[in-house]
Length: 388
Ligand SMILES: Nc1ncnc2c1ncn2[C@@H]1O[C@H](COP(=O)(O)OP(=O)(O)OP(=O)(O)O)[C@@H](O)[C@H]1O
Image 1 (cartoon, helix red, strand yellow):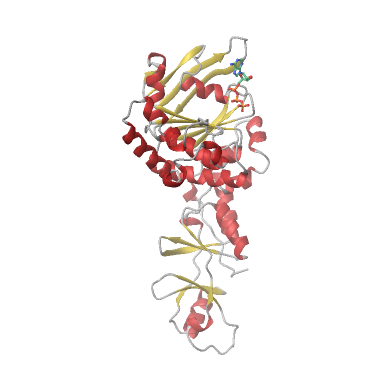
Image 2: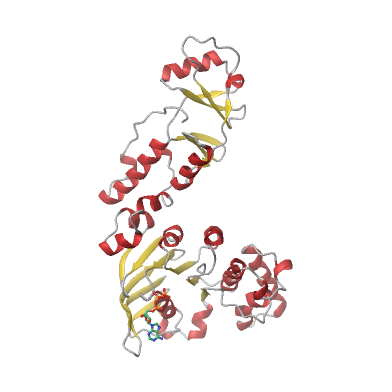
């Protein structure tokens, strides 16, 4: 889709900003470019929409050398989002969003309608914000307008240059999440520049770590964090890369343990018998519709057991959908002070994730990358020990 072939950019003053860069971004893929200040990230972006021209090498868009495409025609195919949104201060939010459409000579009503839809898409009510000026928006809202404007003409390619750099960390995380949701819907081919490794691994399908004008490593997040290719990359991703890895490793079915399952309506003596048989100190309790209700402890040996499970069960509301990150699971264990988290697929109970399971999942994903082992080949052998 977008391909750099041995691209070099030397500025007239002799600065070598991009050094023999080769890189390919697949259709619908989000590639993050990350690296320290001055390593050539912005120059790389500007080469794509011909705000700068390469000194040597070529860039192909859908197989076509962009050197042969008129810059204006090229930019119609490429949305560009920059820090602070780059909005026109004296134009309303709606007009800012419609800028590119006006350049494309859309009729005014159609352009405004489309702009309003785009604002909606990025979570800004056009009837509230459309008539405001950029100065009357928060930093996060301005960034959203920048994204809406870049998407308005539905370009297949999106260049984003530190688009969330100017907002505080909380707003930033929200914008990142919104953008991921949006990207799942619109599936643009995205080149995203950031100097924040956390942002790069959260957003990127693949990450290109830049040294001075060169790519040090180009890999998916889990590989980058699990097996940094060079000392430079290892240093850049940081000593806490194991922790960062929590946020890019998903809970899988094989990570889960299977405690006994009992129904609210079951007799408690019966349920206790089943727990004893399987050596478990507790069981997961499902309600009449098969949904998670909570858990029930195994009664002490010799204690008189009466009533139904419902009389003894405790509520447990900590659950996650399959595919959630290990980081989310860990956060939830802390939040609920729980020794396990239920994992559901839709409404269906799949099993529980325990701290031991989480640790194993993390280790296995690191090992799998380091040794090229398929994750499924490794088995978990821990047994549930009961809620902490
Ligand atoms: N127009 C220019 N003329 C000369 N040198 C330039 C020009 N633009 C950028 N440079 C230099 O090229 C190098 C790469 O700059 P670039 O802006 O691409 O880096 P960056 O990785 O995006 O940095 P930052 O994260 O600070 O934005 C830097 O050394 C910069 O000073």
